[in-house]
Amino acid sequence: MESDDRELLDRIQKGDGESFGVLFDRTHRWLLQFIIVPRVGRAEAEEVLSDTFRAALGSIAEFRWQGIGILHWLAAIAKRKSLEHLRRRSRMPQSLEDHPALLEVPDDVPTAEAEMIRQEALGILRRRVDATLAQLTPRYAEALRLRLLLGVGRLECAQRLAVSAATFDVVLYRATRAFAREWSRDERA
Figure 1 (spheres, one colour):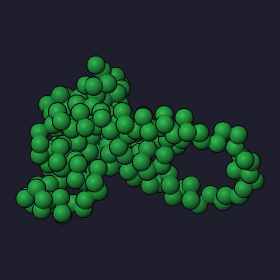
Figure 2 (figure 1 turned 30 degrees about the vertical axis):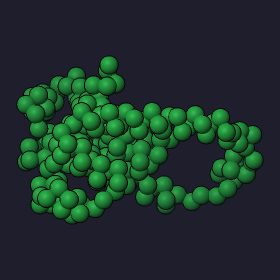
Figure 3 (figure 1 turned 60 degrees about the horizontal axis):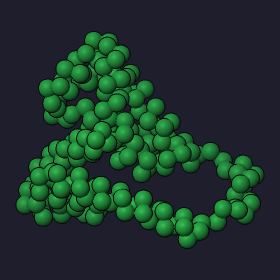
């Protein structure tokens, strides 16, 4: 946790609402992109993000630094809220009558142009991810590539980097923070 994060946390715990807004601004895009949207999809992501920050606000007074940063803590809350959301959704009875659009043939069948645009957008995103990874130390970039892009298991990642699993967890955590910083720098530029 950086000293700036510690000061921000201290102000939030003293009841400074603007500081909580700063925390939201610093973290919400990362939570959406890397934690929430992959789990629940774009349509329901804002609801889960709202639940995440509501839960965080309710328990931030008890947050204590124990080697896990505030972003990691928020990510854990977001994962839990995503899972709760999916469980709630799976318990709701669904019928085709509840979704009349599923019974109709769509007029906007994907065209070659739409697929070309989608591929171009993916290409832009891939290039941006590659450029952001290039800004990181090689160890951080490799940890992110292995675990997040290639989906290699945690223990195998640790073996490939010649570190213990616990050390790999720390490297991955620091790498995600460094990636998020570089990614947001690019957004501001």
